[in-house]
Length: 282
Image 1 (spheres, rainbow, N blue to C red):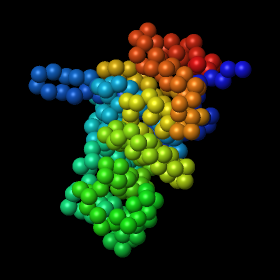
Image 2 (cartoon, one colour):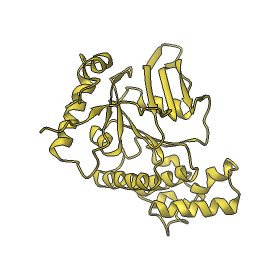
Image 3 (cartoon, one colour):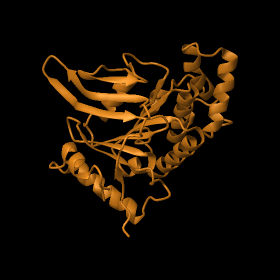
């Protein structure tokens, strides 16, 4: 019997979402023109999700992440966290960016991880140091506490950024293509490390990528966004995939099917919902 590659998402019965994005349109305005980044995008993220925003460059996925973080306001629609509107950045949502220069170069690894804990006044210096040591060890950097960023590899810098984010104990960890600038081997290692951390801690993750393979490896739910401006094409369950299944026939079939859903202009959310609500997508 053929096993479905993945299934359409059905919301958990009776479970309220942690994060809700409802018909959000995002725009960037200049004196010359207005550019719409996303058009009426909606999705829910539940506690413990590994939720992936997947789409081609320019579809507005990073803009959506910034809106969830509170850095930009929607042109229309709403974003709520546990029912409360998101209006500004907060310690309940911490972002790990792609850029390696997100770490102040004059601070050591230990100081970088301690900094947001002290700046937010969540902990005193002694407690912040203790927590920083804990998370530095969790990401495999014990012994590098006094190193400065310029002495670290790209993967090590991203580990510091992840440790700094998790030390804040956010409700949602937001990651904007965090491994895109890494070489293939380091990228795979970081995906493995992220999966290990999630298995241990079960934090809620919203992850942006333009790589179909990475989306299948990292996520348990994937939102597919159309090319510019970003619209929802489909939302899929992918919890059965991971690094263990990469390269398998089922993984490749799922990857091909997602590619078709992303770039087939005749595929719409309405069509998918109407025809496939009670059917596995293969």
